[in-house]
Length: 363
Image (cartoon, rainbow, N blue to C red; front, top):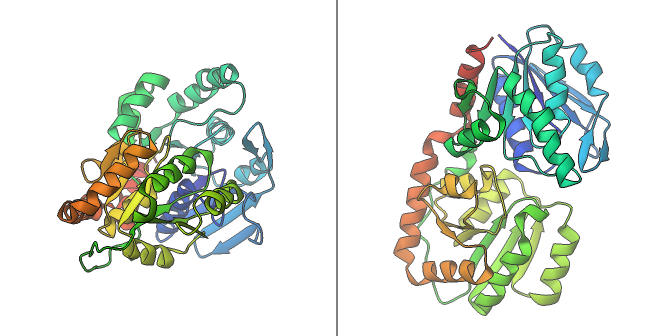
């Protein structure tokens, strides 16, 4: 039995893909190992700060957001109490977490695993940010016992940008909940509006205005459901109400069971993101047999891998690709079947086993 600490800036009920990944890994690992989650109280209003059930302990520390970074120095106390030899699994999405886990590793707490979800976002002036990446993040990644990436493209990126030794890098894709692997009847593309679905955090990265442009181009031929929450929800609802009344519904955060229903309702999952890591909504939609149309950016390109349709970042291009599926329903069904085939091996139980194999190589 291993001791493992999952260190992440955010954790459910805070919404987001990285949060879900951390939660699924923590819960899966806790079946056979002792697991601590070191995280913040951000976005977790109403959640207990310290929760323990069987082998899983979640410790939330008060944080303060400075220069778009969640700082929670109180976590140092919690990490000091971890048993020696604990695997320090840091989810790298912004500053502070890599430094926090790297410091604990240098002090001899245990081996460091850096889980690189995507290129971390700017935290202030671009020049200062690039210096941080060169002088802080880079050394942490190079000192890590293992660096986990989501794809072979990310492996090349980490080698080139941060000079991490290739033999220290492991590819571990995101997983899919079993609830999304449900049988479904073939879709009937009738005369009514095409049913489009967006799932994700309502944040600048997702570029919802671009998706709304596509809905305007499609006009009455399409309706869109936006499932998710986030810092831009008020703005998204206002845009939908003012310029797309009757065509767009914002339904907020959804449970996995509710999302499963939306995937079965929809004709196409659509994404207008400007960058991604490995979007969970793509994997979930693919498991559901739902075709995906997305902007051709890093992260979406590797995830869809021939099982979806990639388009340039424009509302017109998104609209044209969606409309083409309406006129070629057999292609849409083939795309959905191909997506399900791609993600079949990516159930969370298998991803957790792969992670245990990574840990075994360093512990």
